[in-house]
Length: 458
Image (cartoon, rainbow, N blue to C red; front, top):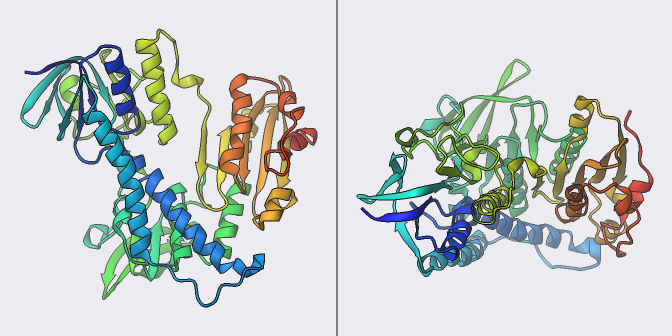
């Protein structure tokens, strides 16, 4: 029975980085991967989808070339075989990099197989049983499939199987109007697909403020995407070469026929086949592994990092999980999950960068606050680029002058948000950034201007 100081299950963002730190600290480490090295981000998430979005953006700009005084003869065509090949090549670089770095890491043994707990400090893989005093779970999440009648009888796609598509679907029907669904919707519309988005709720991306949801729906509709909200899919069936979704809205049932169906209705943790019960590891009602503020499970020798712990479903939260575990375990630096500020992006074009609280959350808490907004059409950089959709919004605590949150929907919003995020982490008053001299012409230069125009939140 091989004995190790530490076992890591999964090679997403947290696992490999922690393996390197543990080995550097003199620990003997085993790391287990059942399928693709690099996890969701590298294989079916950030890396491939943003690579596809880059190709879609080029197609979109090429169609608008005349707006910039550039004449392109003929129709802009998309070669999906070439698009997919480019995406696969980019993914391969990162996936192979993770795999080779682990397999050549002295002090680390790689096991390729499905690891399952057989006891609190024992994991079985490929017929062997490994033991360690410390075990770290980094198994990620996958698409959640809703119990829609008939769905199991038709071919449908998820964010993972979309990576295998090498054709432009004639009509892509997407179930779910949130982050994953909307990114794919715009990408494939720009590739040339007819796209319909079906959302059960009253608006898209319901986690965001209503003005953000409306703005996103607006520019998606302008690109020709059919957005259906307040719509429940009550059944799915195959009709000839079409997949038909039966949709109930305002008491009436209609049918939407497409050539391809993408299910993007949420995520579920990959924790249901790990033998967690054998180790006594607790989970919540949705199957996420329960952890404390330093990512320990209810078993003191076992930690859970990344999407499987329900503390954030992003690459950057998974990486931060690694940093928190390593700091507490190896650096005697007391870091906590509760110290981090919510931050993420929606990678439509234009993108949304979000940090801290939404306006709705500020209102719900009854905080005395100040607010400032600016339309992207008033930002010189955006106007020069011909990309003026969206707006920026910042909320400030009226009493202590600290920034409560921001939503930047517009050109480079996913980058600009960090100006605000860093001030928030510093717990500095908004006047610090208000007095900063930013470079012109940039989007960021208008943040100090927005601070000059703060008004009471009514």
